[in-house]
Image (cartoon, rainbow, N blue to C red; front, side, top):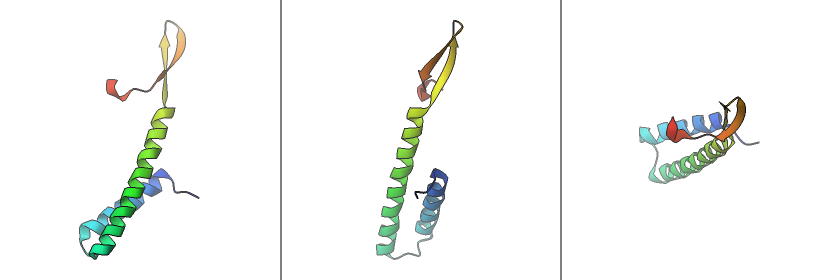
Length: 74
């Protein structure tokens, strides 16, 4: 079972914390960095999929119209 977005973000925060401490060997740091990049990419994919699903119902001339969500106007 895959982890939720929130669980992935928590795991990513833990990795960042470990890397910031500077206690890891170079090899372990690279492994953690690679793991963090993988999780980051998964989170980005989840966000992109969610953004595609978001729609706004707008009442125009008494009719409900479905429009794509546009972040540029917000």
